[in-house]
Amino acid sequence: MAPDVQVIAIRQSSKAFSPKDAFAGNQDPATRRKAGDIRTMARAIVHAANMGATVINISEVSCMTATDMIDQRDLGAAIHYAAVDRNVVIVAAAGNVGNETGVGNDCKQNPIYNPLTPNDPRDWAGVTTVATPAWFSDYVLTVGAVDSSGAPLGSSMAGPWVSIAAPGTDVEGLSPRDDGLMNAVEGNKNTLVAQAGTSFSAALVSGVAALVRAKYPQLTAQSGDQPVARDSAGASARGG
Image 1: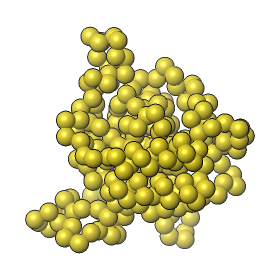
Image 2: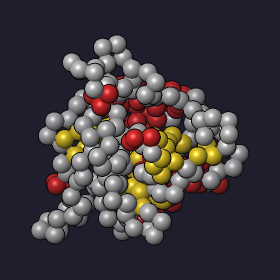
Image 3: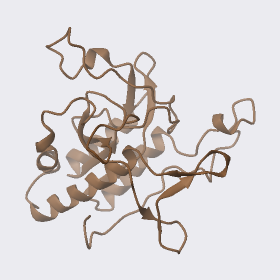
């Protein structure tokens, strides 16, 4: 997507690591606390900005109910620091419905549009699930996923903060081993499942953002994401 780009890889979360006493009263792997959380994400963003990143991709989402949100001041401050003080374009995944991500609840779909409230076309009033860092829409370019036909992917989280969409299916990536590419991951009962979701869409848009910044170095981070999202100005809150 962006030849000759310099990639800075920062591990913010990993299934290979977890805090002490990671299980909440039982040994169910589904309830195991991950090593990454909102605060470590904030630290990773600041670290990337201080290392000179011009585009930060965040293919990670934490979901919470709109009526019971956790303290995100550290994350908000980190995003503002990177986007405003360090002039970094931040690209974030919208999130995938039904997946446990980060430290929040599993992501439950938001309504897309309420025709009874034409003055609120993005349906901010109808939000039931907040996806972070995606919802920091003043400073983050949030990416939904579409399928190979260009239709919104059913699992792509909707929200008024979604600005653009990119392909999120039929994805190939580098294998963690040294034997080339991979196009599937291990699923239930030792089956292989095709890679799909907004994390991959966000990575594609991050590559485009890197190209835009290389071609137009005079653009600030806040203006630099506009050419990327320009063609999606009339998109729904799902990004499609």
